[in-house]
Structure formats: structure tokens, C-alpha cells
Image 1: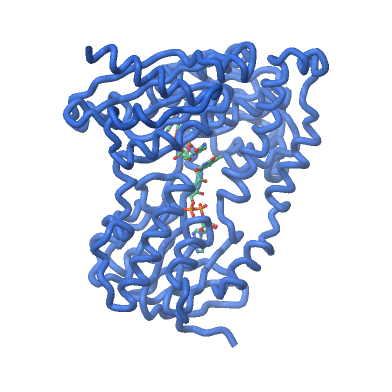
Image 2: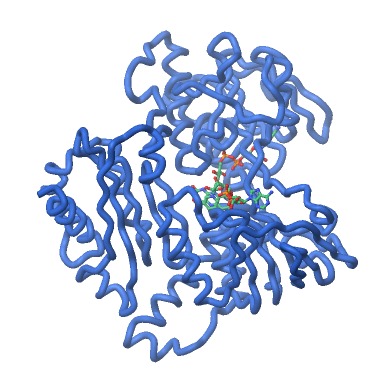
Length: 485
Ligand SMILES: Cc1cc2nc3c(=O)[nH]c(=O)nc-3n(C[C@H](O)[C@H](O)[C@H](O)COP(=O)(O)OP(=O)(O)OC[C@H]3O[C@@H](n4cnc5c(N)ncnc54)[C@H](O)[C@@H]3O)c2cc1C
Ligand SMILES: NC(=O)c1ccc[n+]([C@@H]2O[C@H](COP(=O)([O-])OP(=O)(O)OC[C@H]3O[C@@H](n4cnc5c(N)ncnc54)[C@H](O)[C@@H]3O)[C@@H](O)[C@H]2O)c1
């Protein structure tokens, strides 16, 4: 019979919850359970990172091939085989069958309980499943890892038109001919990219702000906008969606077109499309989590300290990892926090000290890397010039086009740009941004330099191999030397 008492109870079986459970019981006889109300693997595996990157990969390869003599003659103007791309995406999402992830959990001595979890007071979790309600007690810790859900603005007619959210656009089963995308953030630009690659004829982006990817360096959003336009997108900046109408709405299921044509009123103009995709940010999955039973506010992100312990709750028993804490809503950062939280719980369980670097999620502060898999890709780590200046740093910057032997060999039309943000006081990197084909693979060097606070004089001796795109690092350091002399 299943235990009702565990050392660790995790609510939410996404990447953060899985890793926190694994680290908290590693090399011990501690017990852990994951409570999951949908699929073990979470948003990332079935409706976010995995399907989106599976959809984008073939388009990137075709884009490279179209610009490489010797290959481009073979490829010509052929388009992607959309059915094959969708079939490969389904392989990555296992058609929403989580048995391999459940197997992983059980092999790692983590129990899985299906149902909706809610805190019911200190160290207590109530699970409502198909077979009733069950109470779990946590001897050591409860870890909240419930993530976020897509936020759909309360615009007149929008919700009743059953717009596509990130869940539909990552799990599309048919390619609509005309699409309106609402938003200018990461989900909006990535999904616009694969929709165009898969053959959408008319795509209009309705962007509230004045640029795409507002949290990146401005040139990143500019280059992505330029590329999307070159693929046929229309981008409306400073635009507001005020009304949506869809007389023939049908709940045809996830990833299918939800009925007849949809008309959107944007600044007085009417746009007609076959589907509308809302990519307007996320809200924390904490509204129905029993937070009020421990004095926290439902519906909000759960604030934590750097040990991932929830603030405002007495005793070291409640932790929050991943998107739910709002610290750095990315899979790799959620997994990092999970490793830290798991190590902290393990150390506290054995009376050990948590006064060492591994017990503190310091990278969440100004050292976060992110890759946006558009064409061109955008990759950055740490602070942009704007956030560094807002944080009070006196900065120097260097910025240049990526034009090295490696980039010209990569493809004939290679176009990219790079920027470093440097703390003048210490001559170390605060941030680095790259835009260009494949630059996602360049960013880890920047992450190491930022996290290690490597002085640029030392970085000079980190010699990039010839002929790689990484040689742009040398060009950036040369430009910095010149600007200093
Ligand atoms: C379209 C898209 C693409 C993305 N691409 C990337 C990318 O390329 N790289 C990247 O780093 N990040 C990406 N992200 C962000 C990434 O998906 C999240 O950062 C990541 O999923 C967060 O992991 P998590 O474990 O915190 O939460 P989730 O993955 O959201 O998992 C939370 C889990 O908790 C469960 N749950 C929630 N409430 C309860 C409850 N009360 N009881 C039981 N179970 C519950 C949910 O069912 C879910 O399984 C993308 C996001 C989107 C929307
Ligand atoms: N490659 C990656 O790492 C990747 C890919 C996709 C998503 N993600 C992460 O997932 C999260 C969600 O991404 P997202 O793009 O949904 O959010 P986001 O916060 O990046 O962008 C939201 C966009 O919606 C707009 N918006 C917000 N409210 C609006 C409203 N009421 N009306 C019109 N526009 C509105 C914002 O101005 C912004 O342009 C982010 O944390 C993102 O980093 C990461």
C-alpha cells in the first residue's frame, strides 16, 4: 500500500519538481512523492520547450541549406514537409503519454500520485484525484513546483473566441492559412517563426510595446523583426487589440482551428484570420494551491530566499522552485533551483550547514542565460546595458557585427551581431548578447565568464578556436582594448 507519509512531498511534476525530488533524496533512504494533476514532465515536455524546439529545428536546417552553395541547388525553393515536422514533434511529446517519465521517477525511488495537490496547513498536502481525496504528510519538506499557465487578456470577445494559447500552437495539428499573434515576447516570436516556416500565408503580430523581445538588447528585437518581416510577417507595434469576434466558434480540441474566421479590431483596423494565437505572458499556477492555509496569497508567485525557502512561512519546510517562484522562468533555471533546493533539504535533513555556494541560487540574480530559437537565434546572459545601468553599474559596452572566418564558412549570408556589457570598476562582464544563426551554442562561454567574474585581461587568454563563430569573442575583446586605449 502507498505511504501516506513521506520525507518530501512535491506538488507539480515538471522539470523543476522532478529534479527537486531527485536531489532531495539522492544517495539516501529518504522518501519522496510527486503529486501531478496532468502529466509528469510538465509544461516543458508536452506544451512548451520540447514541442516548440522540435517544430523549429527543421526550419533552421532548411534556412541554412538555402544559403549554402552545394546544398541550396538541391534544396531549391522547396518548403518543409509540415506533416513530417508535426510527426517528429509528436515523437518528442510522446503523444502526451508520460509513462517514460513516471518510469524514471519510480526507478529513482520517487512515488507518483495522480491528482490535484493543495497545501492543507504545515507539512500537509491534500490530493484530490479520481478516486477521492488523500492526505499526505511531509516529514521534512513540501516543495511547490506548479509552474504557470498561459494568461489570456480580458479583451472583449477574446476568451469566448477560444484563441490558441501556447498549448495549441506548440501542439498544432493543422496549419491555419491566416494567423494573428498577440504579443511580442519569446512565445510570440518563436511561434511566429515556426508558423511561417510551416506555411502560414498571412501572419500579423499585434505588439503592445514598441519592440519585440523587450527584455533583450534592442538590436535583438530589431533583427528578429527584420527577419520575420522578410518571411512575410506584418508587425504592428504600439498596437492594442480592443475587440475579437468569431461567430462560429467550435471547441475542436487542442491544436485544431477553433471554428470559423476570427476578426480582431486593432486600433480601429479589422484583421480577419483563421486563428488567433495569444502569447501574452503567464500567470502563476497558485490560485488553487491552499496557500491561504499557511498565510500566503493565492494566485501570486511564491517569493523565496536563495535557499528556495518560501518567505513569510515559519520553519524551513516549504520550498518553491521553477516558474512558480517567478525568479527566472526558464526550464534550465528551474532545474538549477531544484538542484539547490534538493541539496538544501538534504543538508538540513542531516543537520548539515547550508553555508556554502552550492546551497544558494545566486545565478538567479543577473547571471541568467536564455536562448530564443528564432531565425536568427538570440542568446544572452546576465544584464543588458539597460538593466546594468538601472542596477547602478558604471558600464562600458562593445558591440559589433559577427564577421569572422567561422561565420562566413557557416553560411553565405551569415549576419549576426554581438555585444558585451562590462563593469568598468572590475573590468568583468555583466552581460553578453549574440544574434545570428546558431548563436545559442555560443552563450555558455559568456555564462562562464559572467558567473566566474573573469577579468577581461584573463579572458584574453581564453583563445577561441579557428575557424569558429566563437572567434567573435576575440573581436569583442580587441574592440574593448581599442576603446580603452
Ligand atoms: C511555448 C513555450 C516554450 C518554451 N520554451 C522554453 C525553452 O526553450 N527553454 C526554456 O528554458 N524554457 C522554455 N519555456 C519555459 C518553460 O516551459 C518553463 O520555464 C518550465 O516549464 C518551468 O518548469 P516548472 O517545472 O517550473 O513548471 P511546469 O513545466 O509548468 O510544470 C508544472 C507542473 O505542475 C503541475 N501542477 C500544477 N498545479 C498542480 C497542482 N495543484 N497539483 C498537481 N500538479 C500541479 C502541472 O500539471 C505541471 O505538470 C517555454 C515556455 C513556453 C510556454
Ligand atoms: N526559448 C526560451 O527560452 C523560451 C521560449 C518560450 C517561452 N519562454 C519563457 O516562457 C515565458 C512566457 O513567454 P511569453 O512570451 O508568453 O511571455 P513574455 O513575458 O516574454 O511576453 C509577453 C508578451 O505579451 C505582451 N502582453 C502582455 N499582456 C498583454 C496584453 N494584455 N495585451 C497585449 N499584449 C500583452 C507583452 O507586452 C509581451 O510582448 C517567459 O518567461 C519566456 O522566457 C522561454
